[in-house]
Length: 252
Image 1 (tube, one colour):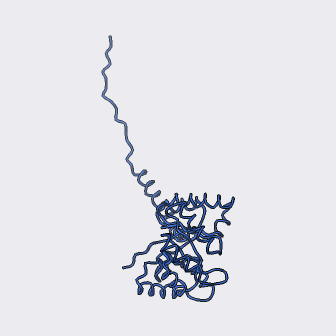
Image 2 (image 1 turned 60 degrees about the vertical axis):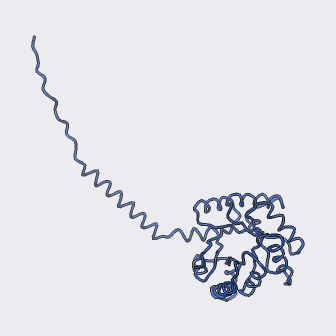
Image 3 (image 1 turned 180 degrees about the vertical axis):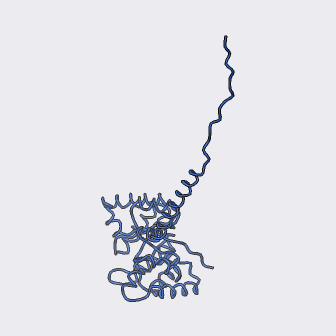
C-alpha cells in the first residue's frame, strides 16, 4: 500500500515553521520568491541565503524547496548548484517551462537530477500530463497547483487520480505534491485522491485543528470537573477536636 508523505508548510516565516515543526505534523517546507518577498526578506541574495539556511537548519533533515528566480537555463543551473551548497536538505524548484513555453526547463530538470544529483521539485504545473513529463524527466517531486486548477473550472481530484494511476503504472518514484491550497477541505480530499504531499499555509493547518464544538466540549468538561471538585470538598467530614485527658489539680 502506498504510504503518504504528509504536509509541507508553505511559508518563509521562521516562527511559524518552528511552531508547526514542534508539533511533529509537517514533513517539509516550501518557499518561492513571492512568499519570501511578502514575508519581508530583504538584502538581495545574502538575505535570501540567510533565510533559507535558517529554515533548512530548523527542520533538518526534512526537505526545503527553494525556487529559482530567473528564466534563463544557465542562470537556473547556477542558482540550483548554489542553493544545494546552503544545506543538504534543500531541493530546487524549477517551473515546468519558461514564460514563453519551450523544453529548456525540462532538459535542465533531467540534467540536475541525473548529472548533478540535485533533487528537483518541478512546479507551476496545471495538469496530469505536465506532471507525467516532469516525472519521466527524473524529477523527485511534481507539483500540481490544485487551487489554480479548481479556479480554472476543473476538478483537481480528477487530475490527481489520473496522475496517480499513470505514475504507478510507470513505476515512477516521483512524489506528487498538490499545492496552491485554498480550503481546509482540499487537504483531505487531495490526499484521498492520491497526493503524496499537500502544501498548506499555517492558517489552514490551524483551521484543521481548531473546531468550535471541540472548544465547547472542553469548556463543558472543565465546568463539570469544577462542580465535581466542589461537591467533593463539601462532602469531606469536618474534623472535631477531641478534648485531651484531664489533669488533676494538686493543692498544696
